[in-house]
Length: 234
Ligand SMILES: NC(=O)c1ccc[n+]([C@@H]2O[C@H](COP(=O)([O-])OP(=O)(O)OC[C@H]3O[C@@H](n4cnc5c(N)ncnc54)[C@H](OP(=O)(O)O)[C@@H]3O)[C@@H](O)[C@H]2O)c1
Image 1 (cartoon, rainbow, N blue to C red):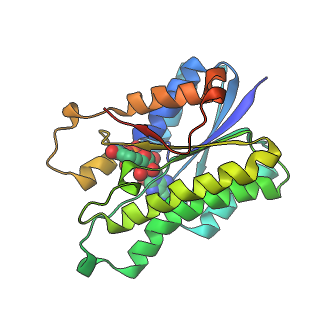
Image 2: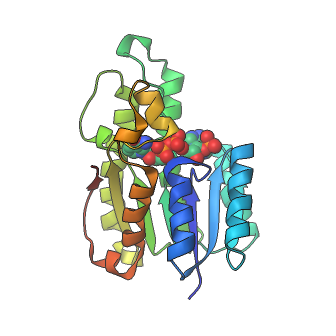
């Protein structure tokens, strides 16, 4: 069967690594729908994928997932093009570390909209369309399990995502949807640079490592992994 996988935040970092890995290793996935904001990096990534995998389809959508109107428009485009999504990887993530007295409510809300509400809206949209996906993977973070000074907005959004995923896991069983939450630890990406600017990226987990774990979850063997929140770290 040729399946369609939707991956948010697939212009770079972990999301791009997931698409790279699955395009190579998952013959059942014939179509990748990706969402990120418009950028030359995103364009180059899609060009690279199309050149390397001419037998697969890559459909880039452009949206700020923290903006409900833009996200709705991207989901409407999928519907208008009659694209049925079989699997969703909610990977797009945002952080702006600040101490409690520096946090601006609008930025807190934007963090929640991007990291928590967008994954919900995508899944709700597909269900309301009458096409529940068979697999949802939400990418949370170990920051959602343990606090760190300065990471309040990010940690709160990821803690919410971990618990929201557990509700989805139970509620979507009725549709036969498998819902998995993974919480990566430190991984060498731009987002990690924002959280820990002085860290040497060569000393921590790489995006390809997380993509390898995702490939297992997406595979037939992954169907046997039943976890509320799978921690992925070195
Ligand atoms: N790196 C870590 O140490 C680590 C650890 C635990 C969990 N995570 C989680 O892993 C996921 C991927 O992060 P990463 O580390 O790969 O970060 P990254 O390299 O900074 O990439 C983030 C991706 O998300 C997209 N994105 C961010 N905000 C967006 C928005 N509002 N609308 C649309 N796309 C948006 C970015 O696309 P554009 O900016 O091009 O639009 C980019 O493709 C995130 O959910 C993050 O919280 C990361």
